Length: 169
Image (cartoon, rainbow, N blue to C red; front, side, top):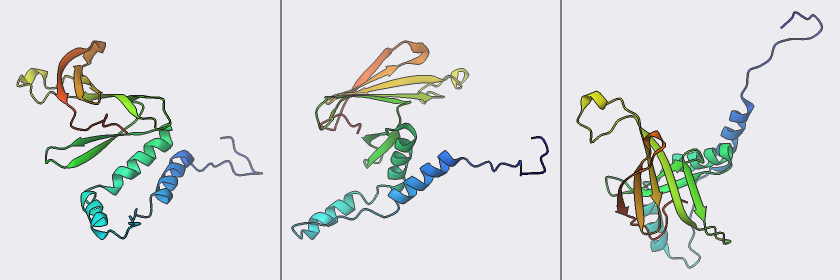
């Protein structure tokens, strides 16, 4: 900046958009969710709390943060290698959903695009740094896996979807 005597020419470098998102997420998710039974069924409340005790508060914060940034965020539900219910946060950059158009907006098809910098099943050490792109298509009864490297879809196989609906919310 050119030197000025009448006013300060210094600017404070503050990322106000980032600060707003962090404050909004902190404010809206700062208090824990509590469950109350209308029929005074304490067993039901204990069951709910036990089933979501492994659930991370950070997951809700990631969902809210991504929805503040992109306007929408998605949650992919799955069963992890320990047999526990888990979820991953997805954004419009790596997920696309098709809804039924009703007021419930039920997801009838979901696609999840992801990249792996290595193939865990590949034993050839020369190819260890290859970048592989994948696309999983979620339908109510099945999950279809594709290799999307180079922009060409190669069918890798299918798995049974254990959830009754598409596991992307």
